[in-house]
Image (cartoon, rainbow, N blue to C red):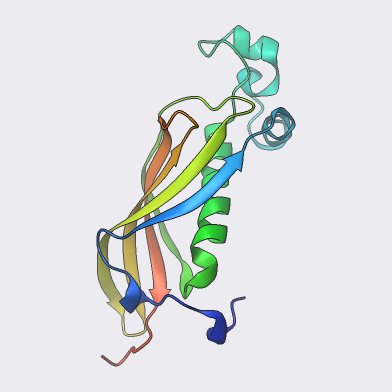
Length: 154
């Protein structure tokens, strides 16, 4: 749990149009296999042969793995500095391109809309995106994060 004194960003600090670079993540073959074995054991996530027999032509990461990678970048690159109070969920999840072993992914989060939810909480709706090393979009969704207000009475 984040200590109040460590919080840098409250709901009032979030503005429509703000964009946050969340850093990079290197995807390894071993990680793809481990995630798929445990959570999404489809043939194209489990082996090169299974991938070659599919439309993807080789081993690829699960879309759920991509979403989890984004969450790791989002927490480390943004949420850990905020007054996050969880999320109301995500909308419009899209897996646009396959992720291959060795890909380097970059995360970005852009605030679309801010609204008060209740006295002490506000909601920031934002576009979550992952790009590969060629700057091609591989995954996106709209997230609805809840953030504690610095001044809940105002």
